[in-house]
Image (cartoon, rainbow, N blue to C red):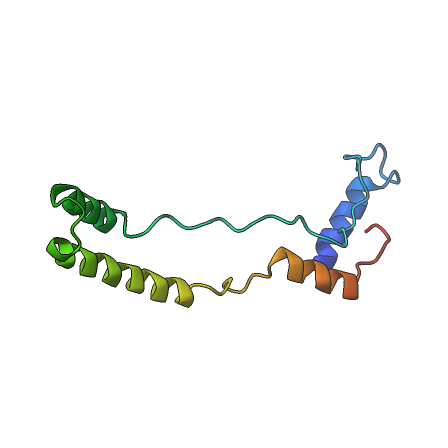
Length: 115
């Protein structure tokens, strides 16, 4: 459906011209000039298994770092890979952050009238 077809349908549902309105709007049917400031969800923890193997090795060897060099290097390589992956996904993939959206909505406010 195009935008004007949707507006026509909503106007027909709200009008009293065809009898009793099919729906009654509790709030005006216009977009607000701000969005909610929700935080983005954090991703899941990475390198947890490598960290647990490193801690187990430390516990077995009385926290001697020299004896656990293989586990330490495995953990650090995992962390580096996770950081590279996070930098690649750092963009919001075409979505605006709430702060950016609010800035744009203040600059270009919506029409104050209903549909």
